[in-house]
Image 1 (cartoon, rainbow, N blue to C red):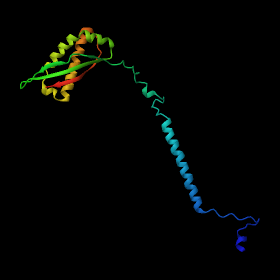
Image 2 (image 1 turned 180 degrees about the horizontal axis):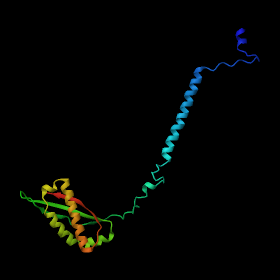
Image 3 (image 1 turned 45 degrees about the vertical axis):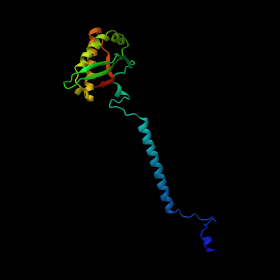
Image 4 (image 1 turned 30 degrees about the vertical axis):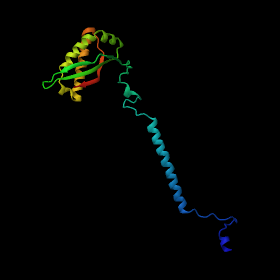
Length: 178
């Protein structure tokens, strides 16, 4: 019974066992993991919730110089019907181009002007399209250049006739070359 007496302290209560070094090491690992998790969560929340403040020190100052965006009007399209059909300049063979052209503007009043001046527009575009060579129009770059030339011609005529600008783009909705 000496072993039972050894495990008792002077008051007759069982003596506390010494804390094992293993459980103390595990306590430090758990404490470190909890602190690391809290620090990581704090860092993430700081980056998410706080916007970067520019050098001026005022939040939102990075947009102070930007012009307020004016909402764009909806696009209006005008088809120059019927399709244009022209002979192309080609010394070797008889070639032709058939193209459907749509004009885009954000000014609804210009649609009426386009309708009114459609005969002049069609005449000018027939002359312009008839000057093209098939070899030039075979590439994407050639078609894009023609599109830019058509846009410039439409803008020039509308400016001369009405004094207005506002033709934004022209689109080829059909393009056939033979």
